[in-house]
Every structure is written in structure tokens, then in C-alpha cells.
Image (cartoon, rainbow, N blue to C red):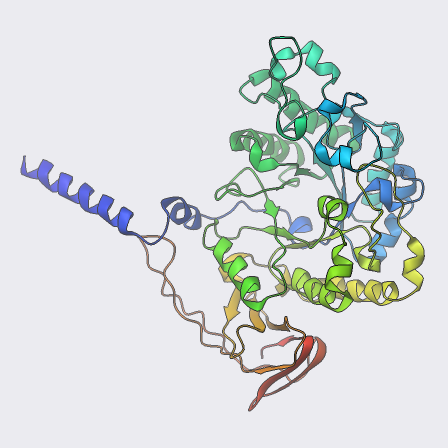
Length: 485
């Protein structure tokens, strides 16, 4: 009895401790574990999202293949294609998304309303064209990501007739609508899971896909993605990746290699807090794909961010994207400052490539090339994820200036950015406050202080000077990147 009482009191005390803990239990458990390891081609990569309808005047895979050498020269290592598989052609607008209707194109073909997951839509070319695109990318040393749209499908997709159990039906025999008015797929059905995992296998074997961006990935049961990744690991020798459009605390244990990152806004505190807030929830070494525009934003945001923010502010965001922990992702045209408001994912809106020959496109292109080279030249920007590789530093102008260091055991680099349009002066502290791990079990008293002094010779700088006595003097939207020696 005494033994039972002791056990009862012990468990009760632990329960009280759990309730009293300032950290959520899920976050604590997630942060105590390591994220899955991913291939270096991904973690060291620079990604470029290709929206075929805008990327070339032709809007085809064959034409896009001809521009892969351009992307290689820009510094891109991963070409990510928006969906190119056969789209549903049903003209019943009750099964169109509101965005699709508002676009005004009157086009039933929505890239995210798939009818056939195995074959290329004739708008983009042929199955062979997709194979050729991947083969050329591989010849140039690049990888290719496809887009998987598994939350829903098109209302007249042929496989729904063959497998009605793959979705839900109304009493009158019509398909029940899910999000965006599309039929939602039924992941409680084992045959559907088998069918879709077979599709992933086919896309790797037949076309040469190196990985996948998963549309609304957090809307699909995580165990499906875990099973899919197990298959991919066996098929490719752990050399393929899954990128989640979305975020759940524990999805990078096994199911995903990275989640979509986030746009921090032009505010020093938001830049830091958005990072530290998510890092505190995630498995150690979690990875994020960082961007400021994608196919959704470029379609919906008016004016485009290029216009609302201005070229100098976009340049500051690009510095953040290429130096912060994670993988930078450019949307097609970001590198030439494209701001065409005719752009839409719902119709053919070719980008004006002459922007490459005039300002601000010419300068932007050169700047992106320089940032991509920075990641190649300094592995510290790509080597370690999470708190082991990135440490935020306090500044005396915390509302205007953010600062962090990247470390990999061989090199330490500091990045200081003024997020305002006013000059700022500040000092940066190398004393890092100790913090507890998000766990009631093991307080973390690791010394995170930065050792050394800031080099007088910046790696990359804009309108900024530094002295050991006075600290940083930074112009509007200025930045400083240098080694700590």
C-alpha cells in the first residue's frame, strides 16, 4: 500500500508539473526530438517556383526547358513546377473556386483541380516533354519538385467513376463539395492511399521527380505522408523530399522535410519573434522554405508586393531569405522585379522578359545571383538548422534593427538589418540570455554567447559602417554581413 501511495503521489506531482509548465505539452515533446535528416541538395538549395502559364510566352514545358540554363546561371538549384497534370475541364461553375470565377478568364482548367494524376495536360505539352524537362535539369545539376494536389480533385475525374469510394457523394448522385468547392478525397479509404502512393512512385520512376511540394499538406492525415516518405526513401535511397504547404508541430519527425516558411513583414521585432516563436515549437533542426511571393500571392495580391513594398524593401527581404535558416524560394519573375498585375494562375499571362535588360530588373537579377553565390561560398548559411546553427542577438535599436549569427563549428557570420526607412545606430550584444528548453524535464543551460569580434571587412553591405567603439551606423533599409573572427 505504501508503495502504491508513493507511486500515486509521484504521478500526481508530475501531472501538476505538466499543467503548471509554461510550455504546451505538444511543443515540449516536439522540441525534445530531432527533425528528420534531409539530403544536402535540398538543405543547401535555392528554389525557383515555375508557373508555366507565366514563365514563357509559349507557356509549355518545352519552352521552360529552354530556360533551365538561365535558372542555373542565376544560382537556382531546385526547379519547382506548379501542377502540370491533366486538369478538369468541367464547365459547371458551381464546382469552380470563387477565385477562379473572379479571375474573369472563364477557364475551367485550374492547375489545382486535377482530373488525372498520371499524365501531363496538353496545354503544357506531353508526358515526354515533362521527362525531357527533368532530364535537362538533371544534366545541369538541378533537381525538380512536382506539386501534389491530394486534398481534392476535379468533379469529373475518371477515377471517381472507377472508385466512387475515393470521395463522398450527395443523395442525388452528385459529388459532395469540399474546400474551394472541389470534391475532397477520402483518406479513410485504404485503396485511395494505395492509389496515391502509387502515383508518387510513378512520378519518380517515369518522369524523374526528385521530390514534391504538397498542396495543403497539413489538411491531409500526417500518417499518409509518413507512409509516402517511407516508400520514397526505399525507392531513392533517402534522396527525395516532401515539402508541406502548411505547418503542424511534429510533421518534420518523419512525414515532411520542410514546411512553408513565412513572410515576416518589415518590422525587426516581427522578423525575430516569428522565427523564435515557431522554433520553440518544432523538432530540433526543423527546416522552412522562405519566400515573399508565390503563385497564390501573385494571383491575389493587388497591387503586387513589388509595388507596395518597393525594390529596396524587397532587397532587404531577399537578404533575409538567403541568410536565415532554411531554403529560399523565388517565384518566377522575382529576380527581375516583375510586378505585372495581369498575372494570374487561372489564365495565360506571359511575363515580360525584357525587364531583365532595364532597371530595376537588371540590378535585381545581379543581386539575386550574388545572394545565391553567398550560400555556395559560405556553408554556414546552409549547414545547421535550428538553435545550433542560428542565434538571435539583442540590439540597442530593437524596434528597427535585427541581428543574428549563423554558426557551423568552422565559421561564424553575423547578419544585421535595418528594417526601417530611417537611419539607425546601434550596438549588438554577443551575450545571449540562457533559456530553458521547452521541456519540464531538462533545463538547457548551454552557453550561447558569441565569441570573437566583428570583422571590419563585410561580405555583403549596403549603406552601413561599423566600429568597435560606436557599433553600427545603418542607413535606411541598410544591412551588414561579415565574419566574426
